[in-house]
Image (tube, rainbow, N blue to C red; front, side):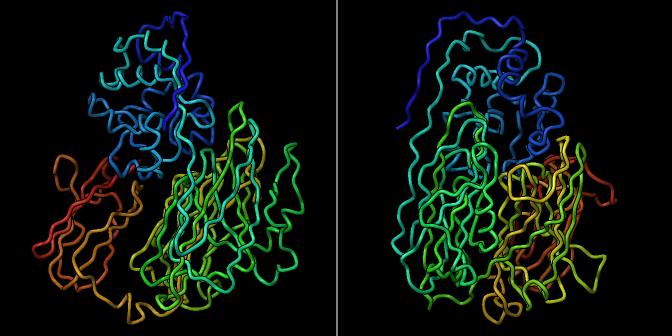
Length: 548
């Protein structure tokens, strides 16, 4: 049950700035938002939003959000179409704390309710902003009463609830722990598991209290059997006085990654017939990282479920892909792009079918790309993954899996904006940086005459990736039989701007790239576009967002 904390104030409100927008700026953005959303900060670079007086209005109005998922849903930060814009506003989604359950249950990929680490906006502030949006979000004029700000009622979120324990599987629990004010706490918590022998995991789910940066589950192997941590003991990487714990850092070298998420609500099911083989006799080491930007202590807590599959139902045993570049050097007050290549023959040793990828970096990261590369074609790179959000990177699923020959590989390319006065290098702490690609794969020849050799059962146009994009994106589509294929791109007025495909094609799983140009090879403007496939009697249209 939702609880409301009511704080009554009889103090007369008068900000003396007249225009509703000016009051929003002076009474809400400036005291509660601009400490993070300021030019030059990594947070502003990450979110793509500056809220200082000089640019805030232009930064908000009719701007596509940096969040990939919100942009794909067609949201603007704030639109000017009145009440219709309210329900199409990413800003409103992010600040509307009373809609807490909808936000985290329906859109966990949107990140966190704002302001991060501080009290939610009052009901009066929210209503004031709501009326401004409904009025068309004008820069001038009075469209909301200042008296609304007298309501200092603050929403209190519902009680944190655990996941249901799986009938066939196990649940591991990271018990509640305190995170002091203005402190980032990262810790490990080792849990022994009373499940002898290997288990096959085909689904992983987790839920965590607000304030989490990430949650990762590690295990160990026989190399580390004499260095296993003590059971059910919190082990902080950094003490409350800022000093590090060398013993904790030492144990990290023996860890083996199993799963991880930077989303508060996470639920991933493996492709049919695929499962991760785990030896639970070495236990699970739970890694949690919480950031508390408030002046009050907050509480961290995590539940994680592993769901088991019968061995007889497993056709492909999944393996963990972890590509890590430790060669990171970021000079102060500048942007730096780093790349690193990894070859399948060296990393895996045999052909691989990759069906999941996601990135991991810290708060200075502004863009993370992954390319498919080929030793025989050194100038060729195929973009297969991109993230603009270090805190909530997208988890890219490939169905069917991407097949990599031994002569192919993966190139990571990450861009960082170091807004500090200090050089930042690779490290394990939140003040350091990382450049990691995690993924899942299984070995074997392409299509292996079973899952992948099967032609599509029906025609299908997949969502493009990445989305939003700049300037390249991939369009995937399935053809159950050979025939004429037409793929076109239109702007929102219905005007055709590009024909990508207009030819006969054989049946199978297809991919085509669009580079953001029209039929005259001229770059098109940023905005929302439609792409349509026609083959036989089948027609399907989807949306995509081009950023500049």
